[in-house]
Image (cartoon, rainbow, N blue to C red; front, side, top):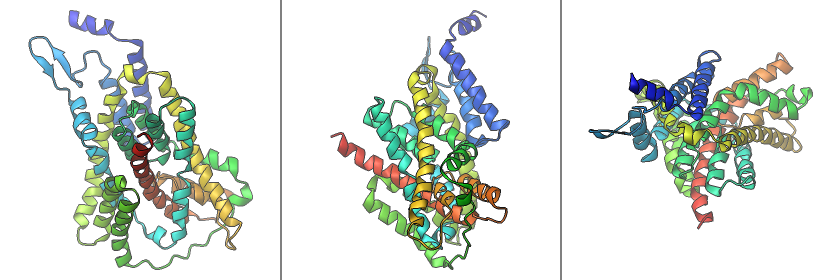
Amino acid sequence: MSFLFDGFLSVTWQQLVMYAVGALLIYLAIKKNYEPSLLLPMGFGAILVNLPFSGALNQEIAGIGEVQGIVQWLYETGIEASEAMPLLLFIGIGAMIDFGPLLSNPKMFLFGAAAQFGIFFTIAVAVALGFDIIDAASIGIIGAADGPTSILVSQVLKSKYVGPIAVAAYSYMALVPIIQPAAIKAVTTKKERQIRMPYNPNNVSKTLKIVFPVIVTIIAGFIAPTSVSLVGFLMFGNLLRECGVLNTLSESAQNVLANLVTLLLGITISFSMVAENFVKLDTILIMGLGLVAFVFDSVAGVFFAKFLNLFTKNKINPMVGAAGISAFPMSARVIQKLGLEADSQNHLLMHAVGANVSGQIASVLAGGMILNLLPQLIK
């Protein structure tokens, strides 16, 4: 009983805040269905690691010595030492993606590149606010709209804010259906949102679909060598999908592997959500900067589409540019919904999907470029 009493007395106000954060994440996962496979284990993990004397973390026990905590072990082994969990998840993500809509309309590659603007803008803002360049770059990558990339980049760079960055990245990914419509409507007119884009896809051969992930990996290796693990695992998953001889493995990657790694990643990342490291003013700033990154990604894609319309006869619906973020397929669905809202016959889904899968490639390349360039800048 005295041990139980000691536990209650040792609870800090910061830990109480983390219980509330954990409960909020669980609520959003269950009640609102926002990324439940990640937010639910993250929320539960936030409570688990902040219990007094939590056995989920390493601790010294009198007469026994140090006892290994399972959550801390998973973090140190699967994220800190090897970045294995985020990378394994990319295999599953790659197996889910069909690059056909992108390959049939290659100009959609441009929107994937344009929609990464928020990353670099946010890095500049974070530096201006006083974050060092390592942490600023880690915060900026939230704008990749790609949770595994955000975790991997911040971990490789040894940022002090891996926990807040992960929470911000996955929270805003889950809130894409709320954030993007507001951002898009703020910078477009109803007439622009009504622009129709007939879908006349070019035939994409099986050979091209097989060769494409190999070519992308090779090009990425020359442009940003540090991105090879990111791009390579994504493209390997896609090769499983497209090769036609490993259907069982492709289905396993899309379902069993992706779901299992997502579950473990969610609860493992909670190690970086220990109250004393998480409940700080910087966390609030990071959440705000993450929102800036997401909004500017979407807005940059919209304005780039408007810019292209100055020179093209067949106008592009500017909303398609906003789908260039990596949040696949949520962003594409948002664009389709907004298109139908403006004009009940305006079907933009396949165009948006092309831009959206381009964003998947662009986001991991952006992460790789940051990992490649930053060490040279801080020499």
